[in-house]
Amino acid sequence: MKGSEKCLLVVEDDPGLQSQLRWCFDGFEVVLAGDRREALAQLRRHRPSVVTLDLGLPPDPGGVSEGLALLEEIVALAPQTKVVVVTGNDDRSHALKAISLGAYDFYLKPIDAETLNLVVERGHRLHALETENLRLQHSQMDSPLRGIIASSTPMLEVCRAVEKVAPTDVTTLILGESGTGKELFARALHEMGPRASGRLVAINCAAIPENLLESELFGYEKGAFTGAAKQTRGKIEYADGGTLFLDEIGDLSQPLQAKLLRFLQERVIERVGGRQEIPVDLRVICATHRDLRAQIAEGSFREDLFYRVSEVTITLPPLRDREGDLLVLARAFLERYNREYAKTVRGFTKDALAAMETYAWSGNVRELESRVRRAVIMADGQQLTPADLELAPAGAEPVLPLNLQQVREQAETRAIRQALARVDGNITQAARLLGVTRPTLYGLLDKYGLKE
Image 1 (cartoon, rainbow, N blue to C red):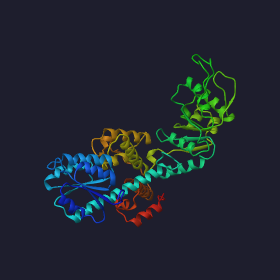
Image 2 (tube, helix red, strand yellow):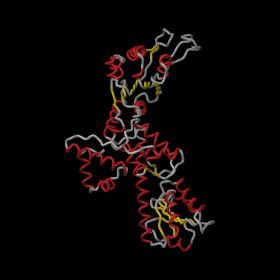
Image 3 (cartoon, one colour):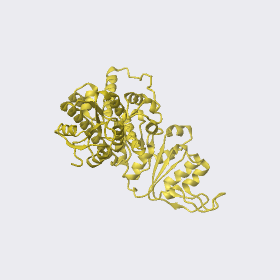
Image 4 (cartoon, rainbow, N blue to C red):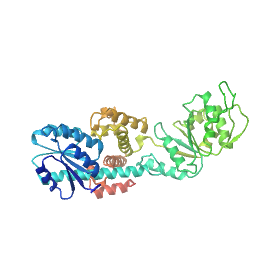
């Protein structure tokens, strides 16, 4: 019975009710427990999709302390399991308390087998959907673009570009606002390329003072300057045989741009204070959030260096242009930090979802991750609120085109993406949320090219 797809754990200390409940659920494998210790043992052994829980358990059968304590342990050990609290009419306040602690639903005695069966069946179906969504998320984590979550058309196009460019050795420039994931894509290019067995050496050109950056990149000879007590290799040498990732290349000084250009052309370097030419064999990936063409026009960035580092350019869209990705990313971060901090936050309130969808996200994915992480740590309830995320719904009206057909197409596309994101891609639930039939939704998906 272990791992049964339809396993139900009934936690009830009354033998008569145990017998009655055992035969209530024809479609389930039913296992029984009469107290907290036995219930936890059965939970670990059978991994049930649903638990029915009587709050009055020994040694406190007249109270609810044991039942609520067991509920908290079930939620911590098996957060996907749906707990249905079965209680008397005079215990409604306790049932509501159980809901706040993470119970899926409650059922008031006396027991009606048909109605309770419907509640349990609904809980099992939700468990099955969530389990399948988790499986799909984990399968995405094993994809070639490890660590990258994308479902929107712009991001899927970027992923396809990475898959094409990665097997080559061309110097690649990644452009995008701060927080869009430039380093993640640089890592994907490295791991999918011919130099994956070598090192990926990253250096942030904006984080190191100009007078130290040259020695960090190229290394230095003993005695080259005050404090140079021994010969030291630079980041470029350490990346030999692998990949060098130069982040924020738009912040390089003019002298360093010239030296970097020679290295890219000749694939040799000289350490600071040295005369020996050292050959290096590596791939170079650069990134910046700056507008390099504007810097070229201003004279602050060399045009010849620009063409050398941008043999292929990949532009990452900001989060506000990635329709459908926001909620997928938010849920992925919620799951990650639930695991990391041993929390049991189950999702976002409707107000929180609306607040996230209307916020500008100037810090992009990095800002979203930071807000969800902080909210998971600080939240008191089972769902994250706008206050937990430190967000408030934006009041400004969006700027729309004057053409009514374009307005309708944009509105329908946005609504479909948001609906699919809210229900993790379930077509039936998305159609219900949008108030259309499934064939109509399939037609709209085909019309707007949203089937991917």
